[in-house]
Image (cartoon, rainbow, N blue to C red; front, side, top):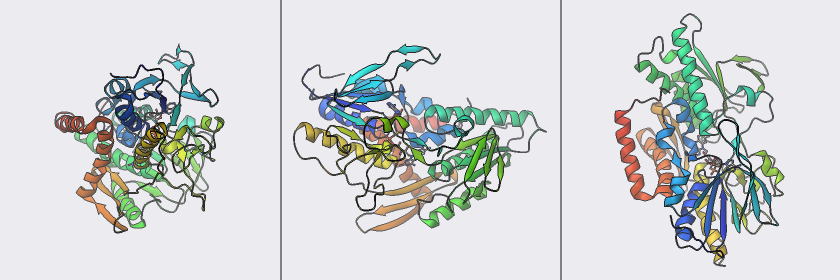
Length: 438
Ligand SMILES: Cc1cc2nc3c(=O)[nH]c(=O)nc-3n(C[C@H](O)[C@H](O)[C@H](O)COP(=O)(O)OP(=O)(O)OC[C@H]3O[C@@H](n4cnc5c(N)ncnc54)[C@H](O)[C@@H]3O)c2cc1C
């Protein structure tokens, strides 16, 4: 690892090694860290990185975290930045330091005390979690897909529930899963779970077949995928319904208890409940003396600097850039946006160090794609040149969908290593079971 030992070079501290933060650390590691022009440090509470849009596949077992996860420590050594394990907790703007929470090990024992890290430039990229809208019972009774641990946790419960179902034949007719939130996460998870049940059936597990699973998908607005063109929502709804998903639109959850959801006029019993509605940034961001909105996202300027701060940036889901006229968010909370923000943020930090003008972030919306597992992939692509919206589906859509992850891999591994990863992935798919069973 080449890391600057110089005392004078600036400290660039990036908190959060997700879709945006990890790409930024890699970019700056190569442009500044390698040449010893800055000391770059990435902070994350986890030892490994897994690209968040893969979490529904982890939850269903279609994807093995062991294969896809990337060790921050190993990656930092090859990409000219430092890695510190820990969770960002507080900020001292006048001292230009952040504090990391004490590190607790897997037995609940405190392993490390609070630590303070200095910065000349700070980038906050800690993402967001699903929004429980303050509804009591969600935290205690619902699964979420906020982290890979959450997804693994759901996966194990899903397998256990099917084990019970196959062994205790007379007990239940179906395994009932309710998913709250008809956005991308909820819709993609529903499809992945039917795919997983088909795989279980192929393993010949007693009694298990496609109809063993009963999924209810609950959405507060009048259609699933409300952010996508209407015809795509309709097609996704058709595909899910054909698989056996019951979709309840215009349905707002009012209460959650163990295995039960209540709405204005109904009650839903479920073996497992998944909460996948909306996003909200972590609460402590609103206590850092930085401008935030009602869902704790940090308000930024078009240069991606935090409003009123010269040397603090925020990117990805934990940030919000408001339209001056409408006061509406201008950038969606997506991996596509986090990727683009990381690139601009990296260039702006370099410009600031070199005392050259900063650039204004322009979000280029390339469209949205939804993967309904092996049943269908569909979406719309935006052609900025002709200002046209192209509807895509099937193999072409599947290929473009997969290319989003490849783009992330290219940003963090480079072309050569991405090629080898693709090749080993291709081979592993042919030699390993298609569903993780543990
Ligand atoms: C199931 C699912 C499917 C999705 N599918 C798509 C899709 O198809 N297309 C798309 O564009 N988007 C998709 N998204 C959204 C996308 O994943 C996010 O928009 C994107 O990951 C945001 O990137 P980020 O860097 O802001 O945050 P994240 O990728 O969430 O990364 C945040 C990082 O910060 C770390 N962190 C958290 N708290 C702290 C702390 N206190 N201190 C230090 N580090 C911290 C976390 O460990 C994590 O590594 C999906 C999301 C989910 C959950």
